[in-house]
Length: 239
Image (cartoon, rainbow, N blue to C red; front, side, top):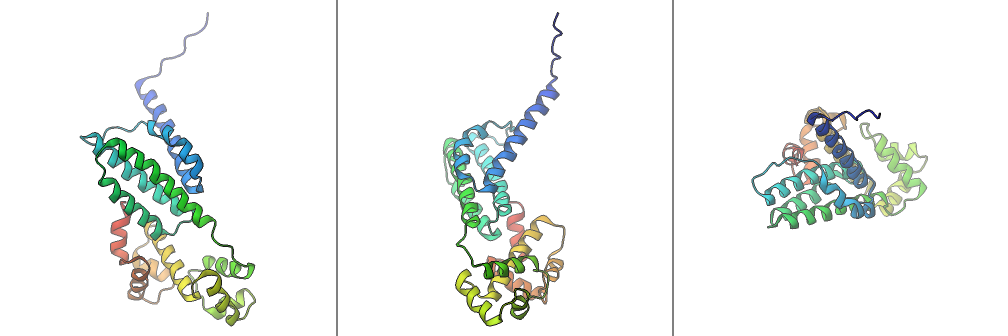
């Protein structure tokens, strides 16, 4: 006589559903993080069945709230995939504003699928930039690994065994940016990451990344993002 399988309690069923939803969610964000737009297009309908409770009074508002939650996580996945913070959040803001203008739950749901693919395509764009020469690739790598240090053009050139004049000229030609502009952008990008994902205060982040003062950090930050560090953090921490 076969033993009967034990019945699952309602709590066990709920935990099982949650576990499946969590795994599906992680799979989705991994697709965004890798820039795998094709798989995302194929799999997106299967991600609609997550066990998410109702959090709004109308179907349209429910879908819009879920859209905002999805875009929030897609934005973070895109940044982790290599998209500059400011560009990921620009796409996020544009998508959320567009979704708010839609009038049916089906339209919001369809737009959510499209938006997630857009994030994956953005990751792909930054994962496949125009190729750099070995010399400039070494420069870019050195900068990214020494953002907290005092990097001058002379120091960079010495680190990669090239002349400052050669580095300056070739760096601008291949990246489209002067060395000093690239360094500033990378430091601001790292500041954005630290503001979102660390407990460091803004003045500490500025000092950590080698800015001479908080006021100078604010000037550089606003030049790159269009907002002061405090305003940027308010706008993006809860997106």
